Image 1 (cartoon, rainbow, N blue to C red):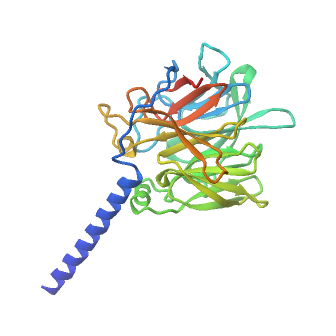
Image 2: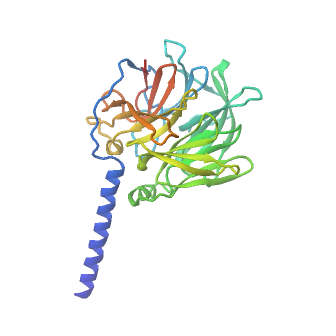
Image 3: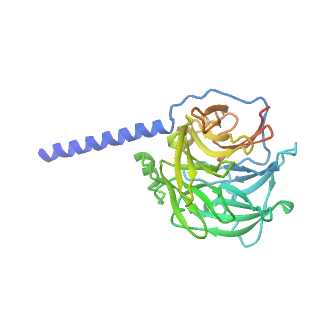
Length: 356
């Protein structure tokens, strides 16, 4: 009888612990958050970008580079085709995406692009495109050279490292150097949900260069979008379950020091930085429950948030766009150029909206 009582107590304690973890997880993914429509007056879908546009990086001349076709565990995918990279010229009113041809010697069939970033070499103005790639579920970083005149990218290098085990996004800081976020602590796909359920803040930001690779910031629930300030002195990291943007200072040894945390009230994914104003533009998931349990009759919504004056005592956090999934589902990125806003998604369409 005594053993049965002990077993009963253990079962009750475990059940209570799991129940509490589930309640906390629902809170962190904003499972029950209501969303009111907040549309911009002139938005249109970009024809040809129908199966996701997970990340977008904007060049100074208005050329947007877009990663498409991501197959991500736990998320729907409506195309079996390999991932692709497109450009979209926002100076051209036709808004016609152009697929970039990938040069020989690269495995196109397993290409599964995620976060992207560009680095413009001041010596020769060459453009290096960094792409997080998940071939067969793995994590690695590809470096390409973007040949704009030929609408092509030439593969230069593949980077793999044990510290880059679950890479989500990347920001380039040199021809072969970058900061990258890991969105899970566990590498094993079966164990990854455990970290989220237990609320483990064990995810990291990694610095990579040919000379050194090291963890430079940690204690994130799930490191996601990452970008750099216009003066190249600070790094911004989105921690999705924390509903916050972390502002970090680049130290002399390339480690990152804490400056502040800015609450945003949403599950914000990628970060775009306006080079002129320094404003942050965030593509966000307003309700993670709908994203995790996809239902076409009640699809996940989309949200765009802007942060102004991020270094002030009271940064201004503004919802610029919100949709319940009737127009665009699962937004991940928002990028601006001359009064136009590009909104990308994991598996759905891309929008271009007028801000003025």
